[in-house]
Length: 117
Image (cartoon, rainbow, N blue to C red; front, side):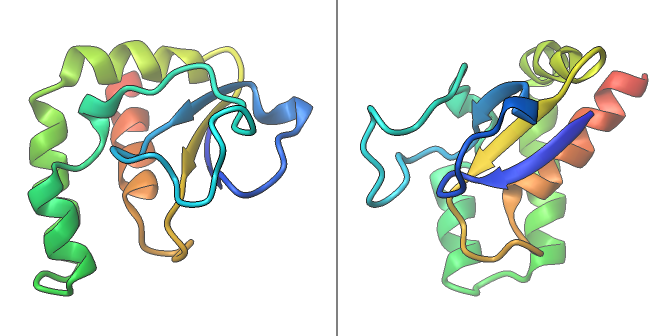
């Protein structure tokens, strides 16, 4: 199972393998306070793409399409990460305020697709 969770939410036992998926360290979060197992920065959106989305230069649909194209360049890393969700829970940790439109949701969908192939 692959799920997404804000970094500001308390960790729980059923989180399983916890992965920070932001390129930048979350604001206001001490490194000692965030419990995570991995931080694969190459799977986060590029700085250019992140900035374009946050400045509303592009909408979420365009962002998602471009982000998936970036993820295609890191298929091996994505597949290795997706395997953590095969027999347990993989929790993708993100700092974005918007829980309905964020890169972690796009990444989770991409990882599910990688795993199923």
